Image (cartoon, rainbow, N blue to C red; front, side):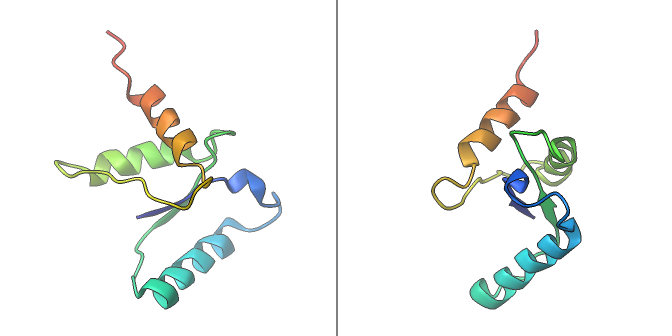
Length: 90
């Protein structure tokens, strides 16, 4: 699964499916990876965050989750959002 963070930086009228296909294409061509799923998020606007949480819970069963990306790609914002969601409320 690939997460395209900072969706809020793109124009709202831009189609999510076009962006997802562009991401899949780039991974295929540049890294020779076949990406099964792309989720577009914005931790600033809470865009698709619930979908991301659900997918992580589904896929992580006894597996590690890695957050990687270029500098200033929103990794820290996304991890902070995850920590707020998964915090122990007891």
